[in-house]
Structures are given as C-alpha cells and as structure tokens.
Amino acid sequence: MKKLIFPLYLLLVVLTGCQVTPETGHPLLATSIEPLRYLVEQIAGDRYEVLSLTPAGVSPETYEPTPQQLVSLSHAEVYFSIGTLGFEQTKLKKMVEETPQLQLCQLTDSIELLPASCSHDHGNATNNHATTDLHIWMSPKNMKRMGKYVCAELSKRDSAHATYYAERLRKFEAKADSIDEVIRTTLKPLASRTFVIYHPALAYFAREYGLTQLSLETDGKEPTPQVMASLIATCKANRVKTIFVQQEYSGKMAERLATELGLQIVRIHPLAHDWDKEIVRIAKSFK
Image 1 (cartoon, helix red, strand yellow):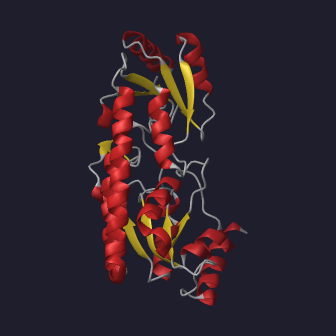
Image 2 (cartoon, rainbow, N blue to C red):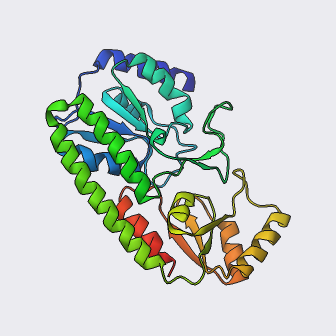
Image 3 (cartoon, rainbow, N blue to C red):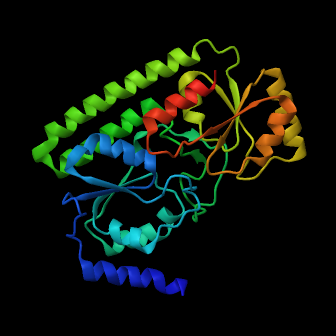
C-alpha cells in the first residue's frame, strides 16, 4: 500500500496543476523546519504564505511528510531547505523532477559549517554534509546570513517588491542584533561556560558565545559506559550545572546523569517556530 502513496501524490500534482495558491490568495513558499519558516516569514511578510514540512515536536531527521504536505509543496515557488534531511534525500528529488517551477534554495550554502558532533542516516551515504553540523539556525549571526539569502531570492523572483523585502530584512537584522545583545549580556556573568546536551544541537550557539557543548549522544547513539565515565569526569572538572534535553527526545540517560551530578534539567525546543523567544529562553536557562 505504501508503494502506491507517492505515485498517487504525483497524479494529484498533475491533476491540480501548479498555479493553485493557498486559501489566503498569496503564493506559497516552503521550508523544511519551523525555525526556517519563522525566518522566511520575517522577510516575505504578507507577500507570501509560508509552509513548513516538519511539524514542531518531531525529529526532522526521521519525519516523513504526508502526501497532503507534498501536494502543497507542489504549489510552492521556492523551497528553502537544510538540504540533507531524510525526506530531502528521497521524496524531494522526485518532487523537483515532477514540479519544474519549484526552486530549491539550500540555506547551508550561506553558512560556514562546523564539523558534526553526531552523524545521522540521511538516506544518502555520499552526502557532502554527512560530517557537518546542520543546526545552523541556533545562531543570530547565521540567521542574519540566511536572511540575506532569502531576501536575495525573493527580490529576484518578485523584483517589483525588492525594496519591501530589503526593508523587512533590515528590520530582521536589527531584531537579531538586539537578541544577540540580550544573549551576550545574559551569559557574560557565567562562572562555568560548559554545558551538557542530549542531542548536540547548540554547537553554533556555543561557538558564537564562547561556550563548550558536551553531548550525551554520539553518532546518534547513547554513550557507552566508558564514554559516560569520561563525560562525568569532564562535567565535574568544568563545574557543569545544566543539562539540556530537546522536546523530541525522551532524555532517560540525561535524567540519570542529572541525578548523579546534581544538574538542572532544562527542556528546550530548538525546532520551535518562535525562534526569537526560544533562543533567548535557552540563554536565560544557563542562569
């Protein structure tokens, strides 16, 4: 039965055509995750409707878009992506082949990528990004760079409103600078600048603010007893006080580590749509 879903989806694309717009009457843009939807909305304003393929609260590395979502994607003008999520390596390629008007914009192209702290099976062993950290949105500086990329793409497609997009970019950059200042002020007094996280999603955040991230998860797996012993010793030596656990993970191993070392467990939502509020909340959690 599953083998029939994608062909049926392609049939729907053909039958419905590519000119259909959302109920709002605006043309459609698509993103892979909610933080990117937030970013694109900041630049696109009321000129576009923006769709995210991965709902908040689920892992984009394992999520499979529904046939209905893929039909919606067929109506989009541009898909802003990370580029290496599971469905981006399988269904999206076929989607592009069947929907010639869909422009792909891979936002990682605008970022200096860090080496990965973990690896995931993205469905493509030869993927050029297999050894890089793709949590690029957890940094105001990176979001500003991606904002420029989004602005350039929209201005190219809708040149009559290029000034509108440029102004919205300027406002977003000012907002990102303000967020950056709040985070720096919040983190400045920290005595310990090392933290533990279950899934290593804050490497760019750590690089930007002079922090050290220690990850429980290694190569997508929980630590061995030897790795755990080393991690405990490092935590003690660096007076670690906080361990972060993402909404998408159960955090059982994190709870054990927190109990042993007396750490505060903080639940975070790096994939939340309200990126501006979440990244500030994460910074304040260190205190």
